[in-house]
Image (cartoon, rainbow, N blue to C red; front, side):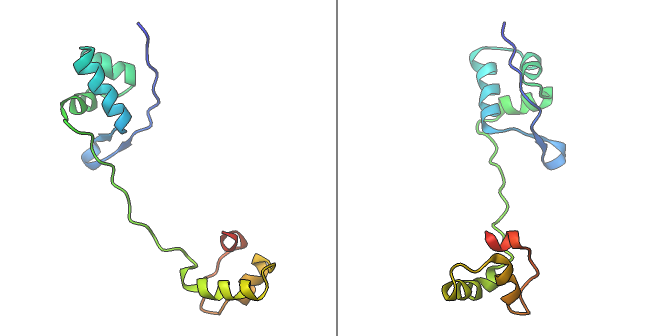
Length: 115
């Protein structure tokens, strides 16, 4: 009997539920319904809680992961000014661009300007 070692890289969802990756969900369903393993054995092999294994085994589909909406970049308002500076002198440094940006531009470091 081969033991499958898995890390506990899960996070808590609503009301303290563990959220499984799709691969973990599929593995639980495979072990339960194809191999016929008991829930406790699956939980032990995958280092998961028995309740989490029970929920995953009875779900028909994996829970969709929620993604946060894309955020604006810090320099979105200054893109045109930065582009104009680069057209004037393509070899201008990030430090120089930062000093030439308008006064209403956010304070950012060289690293942010290089991106």
